Image 1 (cartoon, rainbow, N blue to C red):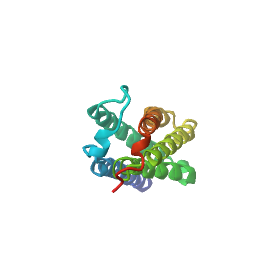
Image 2 (spheres, helix red, strand yellow):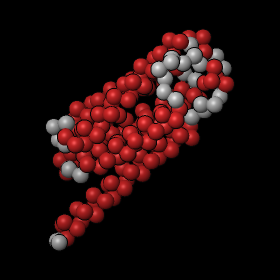
Image 3 (cartoon, helix red, strand yellow):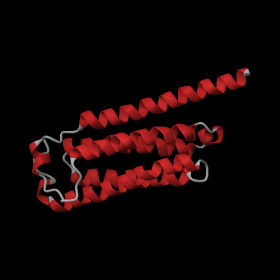
Length: 172
């Protein structure tokens, strides 16, 4: 194996480790930043079709794995790494993902959480569309993420509509 191949393998490993670390950090921040046991959150009227917290946690565990694998596949391509669109979309989805839980449970803003979730769904959909012609497997791995964030946007909007009086109450 030549030096170029060894260097490429090492660089792929470093990129994959970085993507895994960023994904784990995103999941960790989401996990510790939430306050789903607060009286405010418990008092929200929720739609019957809202999944149980354990289901939501299991789905996110799977999604984070799919996100990390998809992005690692995408960033293996030199052409994709040079495309600022990939970096912008990947970064935006991580930032929007991290922002959702504190907006909902700490800031207690159903409006901002819904807006954040809608933006996340749009960015993930754009990322999936960006990936499709470049790496079909990576794009396919992102489809559940796009579907889940779209569902989460509808759920957030429904929470907002069911609880207009709680939007501004008890924000401290």
